[in-house]
Image 1 (tube, helix red, strand yellow):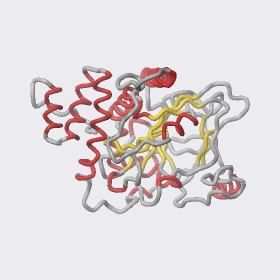
Image 2 (cartoon, helix red, strand yellow):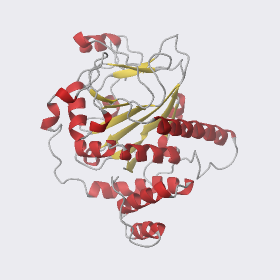
Image 3 (cartoon, rainbow, N blue to C red):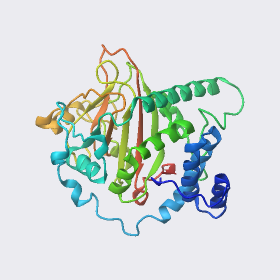
Amino acid sequence: MSSSEPTPTTADPLAAVDAAVADGRFLDAVDALHAHNRRHRSPENDQRLVELRHRAFDELVAVRPAEPGPWPPAWSRQPLGSRQVPRADGLAAVVPGEVDADAVGRGIQSHGCLLLPGLVGPAKVAALRTGIDEAFAAREAADAAEGPKPTVGPYAPFRPAPPHRIGPKRIWAADTGGLLAFDAPGVLFDLLDTLDELGVLAAIHGYLGERPALSFNKCTLRRVDVDSGTDWHQDGAFLGEGIRTVNVWMALTDCGIDAPGLDVVPRRIDHLLPTGTDGSFFDWSIGDGAVQREAGADGVVRPSFRAGDVLLFDDRFVHRTAVHPEMTIARHAIESWFFAPSAYPDGRIPLAV
């Protein structure tokens, strides 16, 4: 997504969007409609943006670099140095106003992740939490009602273009306390608009070297109950080799003490750990013994996150949902995986950013 609003080419911004669509310029249509929706918000605009972003992916692939640079970028292997904000939990962190491609690369490639503490302000956090609750409530109402599902509103099930198929992805998300963000157009708009305004999208674009894309089943709104939990994992075990990606994990609840948070290995791991061994619960997950050996002297940490904190990491980061019996509060969060179109994972349903 462009960080600057495009100049309208007609007196009617929506006519400019229609003209761009008619010409097959879907990225221009996305940028124009997103800018218009900032000023004249409507559920119809939210929904249309999801559809246009999906159609724009082919154009995004067409304009990707003919020969993407080496991965990871050489500069990204250097520590953050003086830019790093000291933290007792050992996570690499920078002041949110300093997030750029360099910080993202150095944080992920040298330290395993990058924390942006307090990136999202209280008003935005409250709006995103409300949007998530409204989307969950609307999904529950739609599931209980007979007849067609809604096409506009807080919950509007996304319909991808052929040959893409959704299959059981919605069921998998719901079973783990999630709702796929493409099905909540209003929250998706707020999320991307917030990340754009705060400079995160530009930083990810610079780090990946390409305007990024989202994936339908890797962009999830979460309400994690205190009895939830997952085993240790690296998302690269599901995504395949050769991808270029950044996950933006956004805490919308204070978590790690009273609400479920994350257990993490706060160091760079360049390889996929063995799965289905060392007492792992699933064949795709990593056993605790393997994690402890890999963590070494750094150990496993359970950070305490505040609502509005954002953690960036990639497909090699070892983590799991952190729960214990004394937790009493559910956790709201959003995780959104951004991919370089030149290395987009097979079988995923794409959306241009």
